[in-house]
Length: 191
Picture (cartoon, rainbow, N blue to C red):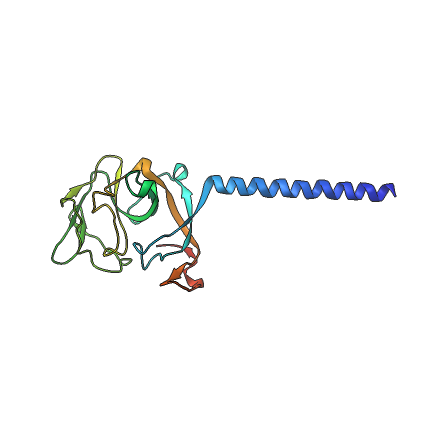
């Protein structure tokens, strides 16, 4: 009988160790990464409303690059609600948009933007050409007709301190026009 008691006690210790390890791993994961849900259509067709993303927290990201999709928060926009945008240019670069062709230029070079859903005709309410300020990024949504982004003073340029992190991958696809569309092929890294 004593032998059975010891086995049950060892099992309890083993279960407790497993539970503590699981909680510790989960907490460490959440310190490094954060799940983020896309709200709205400003990043279509790359991201759609309801997509669940995994973001690497900003304190771990060494450098951001043009083309990176970031999560940022502007205190003056919707009470600091998170926004998802793509970095187009960084400090010191000059951004311009051609009114006639809807083409975006950075430092006089036309951007190749295979990810956009429409040409960039809406210029917003800032003056172009625009020089990106120190420690800031110029960001645009991929769905230029529906995106409030750096073209508008309500968002403006994103300061490095306003970036919460960089999107690493899509974990769970969202909805499209209110219909659940679990598209397995969309899961994974995002371009």
